Image 1 (spheres, rainbow, N blue to C red):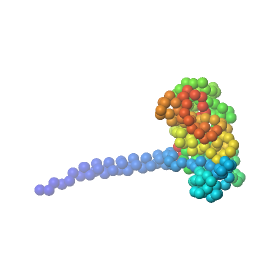
Image 2: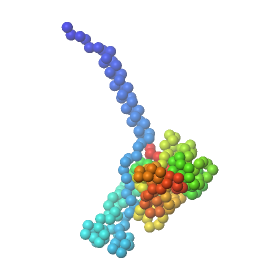
Image 3: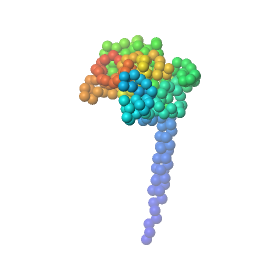
Image 4: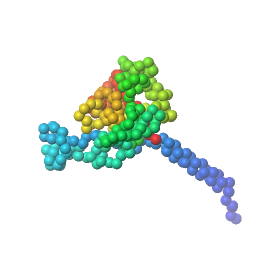
Length: 262
C-alpha cells in the first residue's frame, strides 16, 4: 500500500521558501540604501618621477623605465596616469564628489573641475566612502584635537564635546546628521582608508586635495587601528608627508570621520 504524501509538509515548505525570498529581498533593499565600501584603493596622486639628481620630472623611459636611472617608480603606474573617466573631480586619479550639509551634490566648475561651493562632506567615488570636511569654526573646527576613542588626554575641542576624545566627537557628529546621515554611522577611519586620501604627488602641504578638503592640518590624524605590539598606542596618518606611525592613545591629534556611501 502506498502512503499519500503529507501535503501539510509541502505547504510549510512553501511558506518557508516565501519567507526566505522576502528576507533576501529586504537585505538587498537595505544594501541598496546603505552601500558598503567597494574595497578598492585609491592611487597615490604621484604623477612625476625623480631623476638621478632627485628632481621631479616627467616619467620618461630614460628616467623611470626598466633600464632607466631610477627604474619602476610609482609615477609610471596606476589610476594617476591612466586618465580614468570620473564621476566627480579631483587631482590625478582621485574621483571626488562634493556634498553640502544636507548631503546634496555640489556642482563642479572650471577646468580642472573644482567645487562651486565649499563642501561639507566629500564622497570618494573609487572607495564609496563619505568623508567629513573640516571647517574653521563650530563643531568640526580644524584646530580641534582629541584623545583616541574613550581615552582622557590633553586635548582641545571646544565646549560642544566633552571630554575631548574621538568617541564623544563621533556621537556629536552623528547627532548633527551631517550631510544627510541618519543612521549614526560616522566613525573613525582605518589606517588604510585614511591613507587613501593622502595626495603624495603634491609639493606643497597639506598632502591632500585642498579643493575638496579645505581646512586640513599638515599634521597627524587618528585612525581607528590599535598598534598591536603596544596596545596602549594607536596608528595615525600624517598629512605633512603621508607617513603613518603610532603613539599613545592619550595623545592630542586631529581626526577626520568617515562613513559608507549610498
